[in-house]
Length: 222
Image (cartoon, rainbow, N blue to C red; front, top):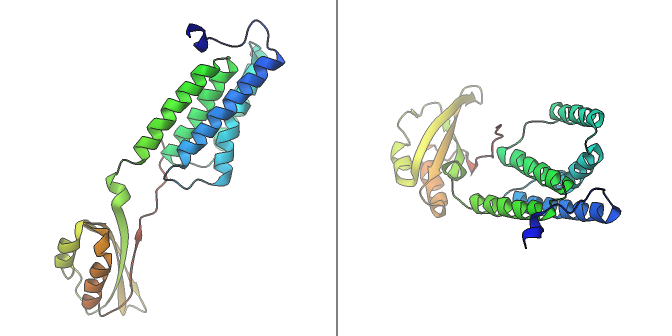
C-alpha cells in the first residue's frame, strides 16, 4: 500500500510505464468529462478535449524530461493556446485545469495520485452541481403592453403573489411606439403556478404577447 502512491517511472521510461501513464491519463480525462457534463450541456468537442488533454499533457511533459530547450518551447506553445481560445464558463476552466493537472501527475508516473485526485475533484464537482444557487432559479419575463397602460405599478400585486423577487431590467417601444416591451428578471415562488401567473398578467396587458423562459447561463471568467 505505501508503494501505491510512488512513481511507476524508474530511471528510464519504458514502453510499459508509458502505456500505464497514458491509460491513467485517459481514465482521468474520462472522469473529468463525466463530472463536467453533469447538469450541464457541454459540446462534444469540449468533452473530447477533456478526455484527450491529460494524455497529451502527459506525453508533452514526458518528452521534456529535464531538457531546458524543449521545456521553453513547450511553454511558448501553451502560452499561444491562451490567445486562441474564447473566454469560457468558470466550470469549464476548472475542468481544463483538472485535466492538465492529472496529465502532469501521470507524466511524473504518479498514476495512483492522478486517479485519486481526479476522482475526488470530480465527485466534489458533481455534488456542487446539485446545490441550488439563486441565479439558477431566475427567469426572463417579457411582457408586451399598450402605450396607454402605465406599467410603473401595474403588475406589482401580481409579482407579489407569484414571485420572490422581480426586477425590471429593460424597456423598449415597439410597433411604431404603440406598444411597450418590458423585460424582467423574476424568481418564481413555485414554477407549477407559471400558467396562472401568465394568465393573470394577460388580464392586465390586454392579452398581448407574454414570454417567460429560463435565464441563459452566463459566461464567467476567473
